[in-house]
Length: 131
Ligand code: HEC
Image (cartoon, rainbow, N blue to C red):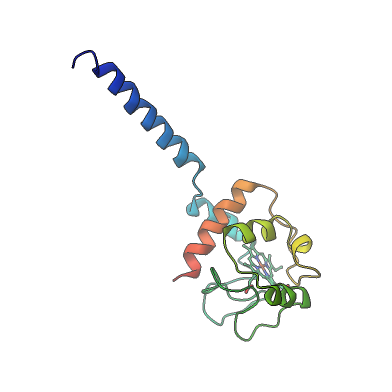
C-alpha cells in the first residue's frame, strides 16, 4: 500500500493540473461582459428593444434574423432562409468578420480579431439572451 501512494499522489497531481488547464481555456462570461461594451451601443437584451441592431433577447439557439419587428439586411434574410441557427460556432464565424459571413450585413462592426474575446463574449451573450 505504502508503495502505491506516490503513484496515487502523482495521479491526483495530474488531474489537478489538467483541471486547471481546462479552467484557463474555458470561456469566461465575466470577461465577455467587458468585450460586450463594443456591442452595447447597438444591442440590448430587452425583448423588443432594438437599437441600431436587434434585441438579443432569446436569440441564442434561434434561427438568424428572427427578432420580431426588426428589419434585417437581405444578407441576413438569406442566412435565415439557409437555416442558419445561432450557436457557439456560427457566432464565432460571424463575429470574426460580420461582413465576410453575412453579405452586405447592416452590422457595421469590423469584427473581433481575438479568439479569446470572441469565446468570452459568446459565453456572455448566450447567458444574457436566456434571461
Ligand atoms: C454599429 C452597430 C452594431 C454593433 C457595434 C454590433 N452590432 Fe450586432 N448587429 C447590428 C445590426 C444592424 C444587426 C442586423 C444585421 C443584418 O441585418 O445584417 C446585427 C446583428 C447581430 C446578431 C444577429 C441577431 C439576429 O437576430 O439574428 C448578433 C448575434 C449580433 N449582432 C451580435 C453582436 C455582438 C456580439 C457585437 C459586439 C461584438 C455586435 N453585434 C456589435 C448592429 C451592431
